[in-house]
Length: 349
Image (cartoon, rainbow, N blue to C red; front, side):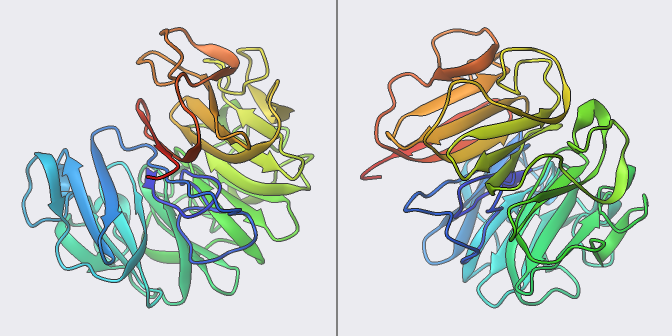
């Protein structure tokens, strides 16, 4: 999924979640971009609100009227005044300045939200959406946060990932049940998270590995409260693990831990939040696949979890179950993470 955001966490990104105009005091001058769960193609904002894409063009996901791969960026057709972007497994999303959302690529399971299940190689408008301030995407579902603090979802509803009390797909946005005062959103693989204004977190969808953080491994088609969290400033999601940046600058994690992605010195899963070891002064968090990243107040970055492709940036290919420094980075202002690759922006661009 992925994701671009002007907030302190990502998926989604996300968020506060994945792309918003202003949702709270989390920024602190830090720009964080996240591209998550997009193993074969990437999307980025450029210029005066336009969008560019490259990589795999399957299902029209590059949005340039061609179903074909591109090894250089191409402009997504017909998009202007874009304020945020997100990407799913084979679909792209753009939030426009007027609060509407456009989608393109695979329409499987209703992922484009236009009332159909057909693919589109050009952006189409997501139905019934207005006053949207943030977007994020899971693998095959997408989510939008409205200005009034409510959330909607569309696409693949497996395991209750749409949060509407059902497990059915929806080709149009449906309301996530009983959520109010949402300030940030992010999503993983068949699971989604919402940060509320009171600093607590809600989760819904697949419960495997304890991904909902509610003390169980049961899936839920409606939001449940993540245990023991009350001072959260930002949320981020990997595949089936999630992360919360706390007000004291530390990070909590829950869900799958098999590659050390919980950062607590074990490779054990946890169905409730555990503290990531040895880090403080965290300003932003990001996650992708089975790896996670934190931007520190010092301008350096640390990483933990899966490292099969060297995505932790720590001069080896071993997984790490506690945070390790990302080598050679100073004055970092932004981090972007895919499943197996990571990008950082330093001061001065």
